[in-house]
Length: 340
Image 1 (cartoon, rainbow, N blue to C red):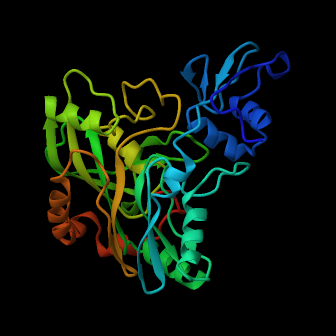
Image 2: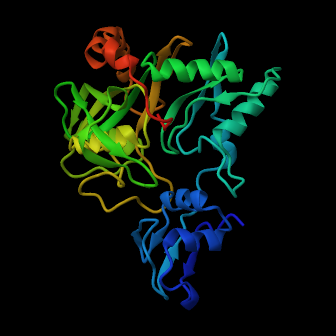
Image 3: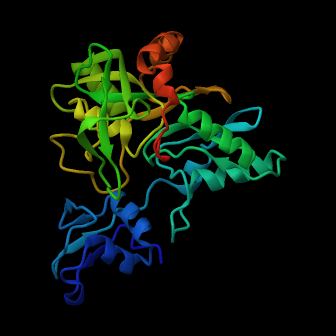
């Protein structure tokens, strides 16, 4: 079964001392990986967020988040952005999973895009090259053949692709900055920032586009369904990565003291993720490399000036690229595939 969405489950005496992920596996009939992803979706223990490895006591209450937005509403927002040679790009809405979840029949971008591709009259299966977090929106690229997918991977490992995101950060970023610390992502629901340098292909470059304060900041937060503190300062920022690791932009932003607005998982003062699907503003807005260039403005409310700021920043991208990545760096082997 897929699990009791919106329900409460009591830990039994037989389950006393078991890890949370193992209990969720049993309750929901999922694999271990799928159970951990379900926990990331907002399962709480006695009203508080919990880690997959936490051992539970008999009598504790597991709270499963309610079902998300309408499946039809989310999948209807998936659209074909364009085809360039052996590659196509789709737009993923926030709230939709990128790929199928083991043991669940939940809607996801890959299944929806495959169906949309067939509806357009094309028969070859798509080979998806990227995954975005459920709450992240924007561009997801796919190859039309295994050979094209391999070419993308090879070029990506050589630093020949630039992935530009837009993010709403809590706090003020006044000058461009590079988050250059390595991340520990192995088997973790929350990526940990390490005290050592990351390879250049795993670093994140942040560029401020606009700083909003007080009422202007609160209006933008409220319009996009995010909580607004009494005194709010937020930064609209462009984020540049090459090869994405798990939660790379989120973890790096928080390490700079500028977590994504609404991202309770990484906010230094946060109380962990809220019950239900996560919600923050992070959008994959531009993918550029040998396969082509796709641009997709974010569907955010009350930010009509954002697209012009972002387009102007993209015009300077080549200059920043020379700072961000050298030819020597690009020749270095890249780590394994991640999200981003």
